[in-house]
Length: 145
Picture 1: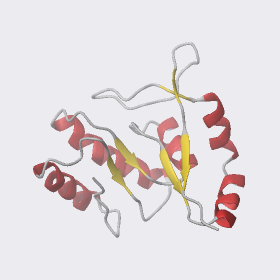
Picture 2: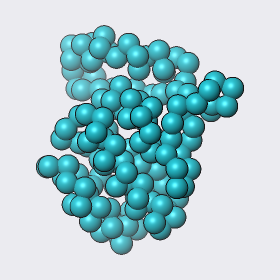
Picture 3: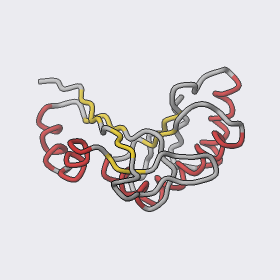
């Protein structure tokens, strides 16, 4: 399910999530494509998604498809997170520029993101390596020439 809003209005996003759930969708992921790509906005939208997930104990995960480095930073700052995902543009030239600018994300992809998994009533946070779970970070791309 993709409950998007042209203003990233969390009330609108929540209403769309409820509507989608009423039709039985959202079982795999509830993913929002944000208008504003910053940590504060991403955290606000993730809090909204996981507020609904927690309220009804829905067995799904949430994702805000901001830049992957923004997602990682939001989770490091305490935002709930279940899925880190980013589609990388549609052209090879643009993808190369994006890839060059994602050094932190690539390092995380090689080693796995070290974060505690999201738990109901708690937010994810960075953790010590001995207690961390490893989540592979996948950057996907549909390149055209």
